Image (cartoon, rainbow, N blue to C red):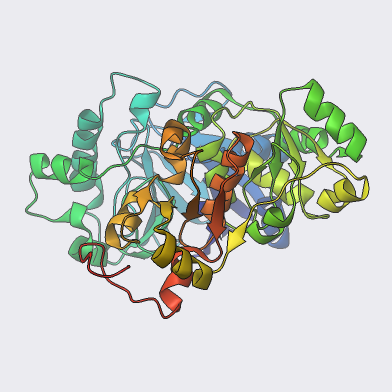
Amino acid sequence: MKIEQIYTGCLAHAAYYLESKGEAAIFDPLREVQPYIDRARKDKAKIKYVFETHFHADFVSGHLDLQKKTGAQIVFGPTAKPGYEALVAKDNQIFEVGDYKVKVLHTPGHTMESTTYLLIDEKGKEHGIITGDTLFIGDVGRPDLAQHVVSELTEEKLAAHLYDSLRNKIMPLSDDLIVYPNHGAGSACGKKMSKETSDTLGHQKKTNYALRPDMTKEEFIKELLTGLTAPPGYFPQNVLMNIKGYESLDTVMERGEKPLSPEAFEAVANETEALMLDTRGAEDFAKGFIPNSINIGLEGSFAQWVGEMIPDVKQQILLITYPGKEEEAITRLSRVGYDRTVGFLDGGFESWKKAKKPYETVNRITSKVFEQMYQTNNVLVIDVRKKSEFDSEHVIGAINVPLNEINQHLSQFPKDKPFVLHCAGGYRSMVAASILKQRGWEDFVDLIGGFDELKKTNIKKSKYVEPTTML
């Protein structure tokens, strides 16, 4: 069977391309649809269907632009209520793509419209299942997202639905089926997804905690809900965009790809409520940045951290990027619904410096300097990694303020004494540093390379539960 996984690492997202006899289907596409159109054109195929497994929360799907540009039919599973033209399929309905068949299996639980698509080859053999967020490799979809859009859909109710869907629709299927999930490790749509992005259903039945055959519904609900962290704030906004519709990416790009001179950039920043977003790497940002700008680097999990740190997807954004990276930044912002980029600094930060505009810096230290400060000055250390990372191992005496919670815990950052800021590798701590600078903090330094760099030095290491040593 000709089925291809198209994986995008920064969102830990998998779309799928299916083709047979000149007809193609796309499953759960990202916002930028040209790569799918190009892929079908390579096969001289026409995209017949765009199948959506559910209304996504962690990204804005490209189904509307695909429909507009190719004439493809959008298909959702039972109970979906999209605010635009789409086919809402019935449970067990079959669609034909060339000689292949796609069978609808309604599997509510992650959301009520969640649907798994069973792929059947030209010989009538069942090949695999595209599971969306119903079943991941090593995990299942979290059941607490829909309640942020529909309050009566409690996480307990959805977890109960998911238990039934897995046992009545998924587990009875053949062990040799290939599981094709919507996400891999790094996605916030589950708790402990594997780094693998596909597997056989038989192996998942043996290794996935949620598919234990002797598990009661009560045990399933308890295990599934235990340890869930709060979802990123942008998730409900993306769900509504996927339900109601959105602007074409072409319109978003046209609005955002507007070069601004330093003078024009400064004028727009002063005359509007636009956020200045600097997407350069931490090292370059630290050496010089426009006052009041925020750093979220393109080289990391850019879209996810934008979603975590910028509360409103309708926020106007002014971009500072490396020259030539403007289109990538606007595209990656749009993947998570941030469509209001209104321009970028022409020539990047260097043009700002050449125009002799004011700029700020972030003081940084090496791990060796940190060791001296820690041993002689008993300096305060603030760790912005996730709580689970901090609990695993951390600098003795450090305070943990996870980056995504920084705005709710600014009181823990002192203004009357110095402190050291760090994360695992330096990406998140520079995001935090830029936010603190914007809010008026000055007396702190950022640790180059973060906790990972500390562990490479000759500093003695220990688990956090062993306070007799430094680490």
